[in-house]
Image (tube, rainbow, N blue to C red; front, side, top):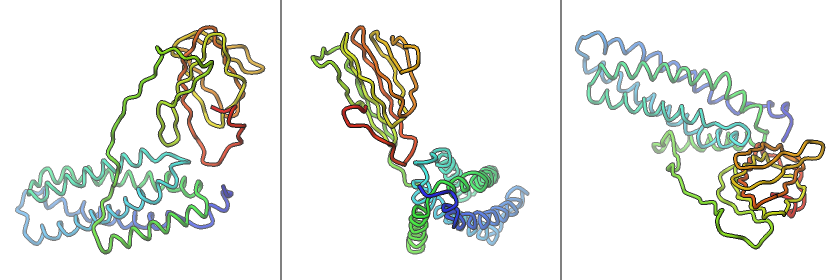
Length: 290
């Protein structure tokens, strides 16, 4: 990656910060208008139309702003700093936004006022967290080339929003899948590694070491968590006392730490390999890596 000084040569978040200031103005206007829905007097058609227009503007601004973050900024910075909490806040804010719009359409003004005040408070807090923490993190993490790509993507999203409605959030449907680790079928191989699951930045593998066999000294470029499911053995690192392996034993192993395992009885071990950096790490030959 380029140096932090190069990263900060220009801002990738400036347009988002400017949109925050615009949104804060809209929120203040909405806050001022809420009194008409809590005073008990009948809301006139002109008052309703004024608030409806403001809600439409806020809704559209949120869609474009969140889309720029979700589709351009967050994917670029996530390999360095996960943006999961910001994505969750986006989901919560969109749910509140959709709820208050529905309540307004139904003229349920008591519920509309309550939901609106919660929405205003939560969005202001979200803006403050991004301004003070998330955006500076993005500026420091991204290279100039990455920033250019983010800016190009945001320009495309904003242009798209001028000709068609765009959703604030586009997410793949959340799902799960079941995987099985076979600890019953005998193997005629001294060592066997089976990939169980994989996700961005994470691999889960099943390592079987037959009785009286060894996994030779080696290292991995990734953070590794090793968990013994069954069997007895010994984990060794040069310069450290051997660690007995038994069911329930877990070991957190730093990248590039050379280690070995000897199995006294057949061992079944789960390996969790986690990528924590985008930059490539030094590698050994393929025969000596997990």
